[in-house]
Length: 371
Image (tube, rainbow, N blue to C red; front, side, top):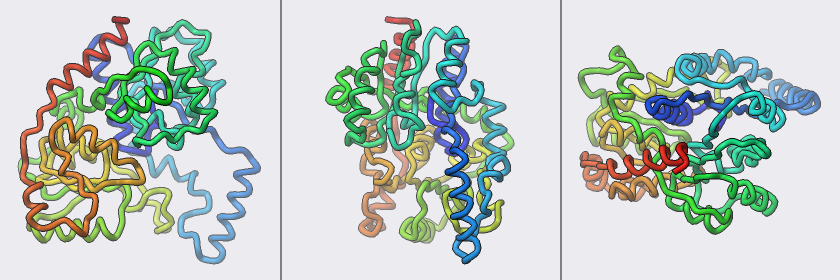
């Protein structure tokens, strides 16, 4: 069980990766399609009036009924999920989750990975502590779940309830080392630090997913993947482009759906996740502010720089980079980085994660088998 799929490349690929790892180990796997609860009539009506007024005075560029365009905007990711990830029917409430699980014969349910234990990102944080499983004989496991940040963001009520639920898990692991402390200090449980599921697979697994038709013989240049584009990041990219003499390319929508920057629906279309992955495979260098952008730079063994995405949580970057002695690849202040520093950091170096991969796989196997 993970975050709602379809709107985030890293989220989709980590879900695919965990499912593939489990299938390789002989398990039948279904990813729970937990969607956000649909808004009611009053909310939708008020939103329609507000948007219509914005359109009339020229402040709104995107269509008033923008959500109706989502099947077109997300057609590539919808097709990818349909073809590559086995999912349940869409479930958008605690009651629908209870009904689904009461009619299934699951041996275990795994929460993770991604920021499933971050309240502001999860549709219902108690659901991600498996409140709907109460009264059922089912093994509860958290694998590489993430709080996203190293501060506690839960309310007092959420902390009390989630601590009760966490104690019913048979095994808990987290994606960041800071998560181990958060589990101990606020949930009263012991957690193990493990790798993101994407790192349990080899480069060859992703090359197979991408397909040979998308992989080029020669490196294409500087690949960028920014979750939060800003003038500073654009200027930094142009600076690195001029310094290295390499072309810049990307594979993501021109604008995110939350932006109000264009009236053209095509500007919001998400490319196929396999094309997004191919961008890393074909790159000579990578610039990113994304955790999974960093992960796939490591998997495809590409020199990279991570621009610290403070609003989304820096703990995610440093926890993994500290494991491979690469924490200096995080750029905290774009304006203060010198040419020599960029040149030094964009020289590739060996990144070995085999011991952590083995221990992470062992945790997963033992958690499922009850050891």
